[in-house]
Image (cartoon, rainbow, N blue to C red):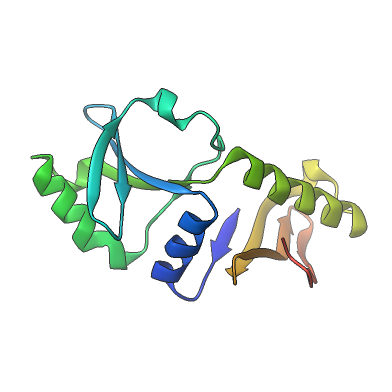
Length: 147
């Protein structure tokens, strides 16, 4: 799923309010650090700490977080390139989002096996599907309510 949003800082702030967390993954050392991008905290965590969160990990690539990622790299005495910044949401929220998508797929007669990618927009703490890319082409979705 590709999610678009107007303001990366507001997106992360809204996601935090919905229970999401951000963490750094050190690729070389295979270690995890929970980070708060607004409080600039860095706490080493065990992957078991992620229990109760979605298995779907969102990669954060917004340029506005690069300076903080560089600062975290400095704190960890490592290269910026060794760190990946991720966002994960609570499993309950992920299940709500998935259920909403499945209802829309049914409404539009879309078979899950035909889906290549789903595009959505996040605004006002709501996820709204905008289109579904399939091998046969793209289908525009009018997700008025969102979730």
